[in-house]
Image 1: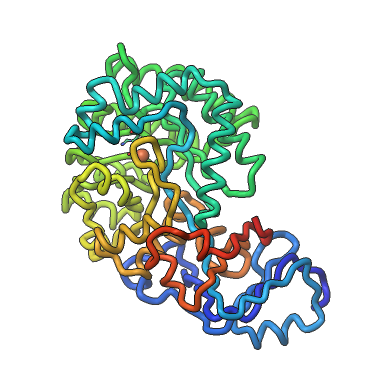
Image 2: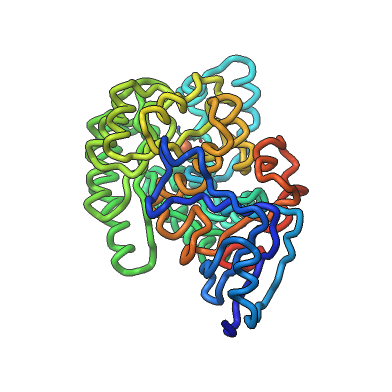
Length: 423
Ligand code: NIG
Ligand code: FE
């Protein structure tokens, strides 16, 4: 073996593989075993893909004559797959710290929304913002996520609610995708709220007849590459019928269905998503038993967002019931002006303490299962040959410290590697 490889990470105390055994996710049965190799190494090729991962001895013998652009001696350290954040709203302008104060004083999310704040406040500021300013704040936020270990992140539009600003947001995300190493899954969320002065029916018509056709044009011209379609299916926002028509239209354009459902009220969003073959549904604080069963059957992932339940003091999503029922459970930061959190390690910590997930369950939810929720688990989310060489190297001998330590991860995460490059 003498060809030139991009990176060798050798002699790590632990390498957490997250074996998916050919499956594209881990549910119930696979979850307790994340396949931890003691004293292991990883080789990433010049194409940025994993060439070998396993016991250090075996890899040393196998790659005896090989050369590497970079070698990291990870003695006393741990290697894990890069984290995947399955739900964020990272493009916006305007500061909503005052709303945090209102909520601390007792206002609910919907009190603020109905008073013209919340999403509406952010829409006003985002419409007025220059694309270059949005790009620079987005880049800062993505770099912050990357430092906290995120190597693949879902990014939504949804603070425009009309064609021009929705496209501006999507273009800004597309520009960040080209400029930064972090992997991005791009979601059109034009149905994030009903714009002021419009009815649900008018907003739905605008999406179906104006926004989606334009998106389709841009996608066929190759100037925009959208992956997913999202709707906020909620009382006082988009009802089940309008959600259905928007998601169906997106699916007909080849987008993955990945939407907000059953957050503040039981809406039967889970059943709708399962019926439409949704890849994922986020939130689900108010999901019913029937909804859980439908999602397990349809293999629709549940993207749980512990920061939202925490900040809004909502009931915790029923992670244990979902796991027991065989639902594919994933995690996201829900980064947005309401839940200002760029850190998946903190999200995993909250999922363990507040939602009673085990540490292996939380790590699988923030890697392979989050990748599944984005339709990327064939290429991301575990350390397996031919997948992307995206990994973290922790300054600790036990991987669980990534979840156990609450904050201060800049010290703990020694390297973040994307496609074999230290970023
Ligand atoms: O996922 N629930 C709807 N959307 C976001 C919040 C967006 C905002 O408040 O700006 C969420 O929590
Ligand atoms: Fe959200």
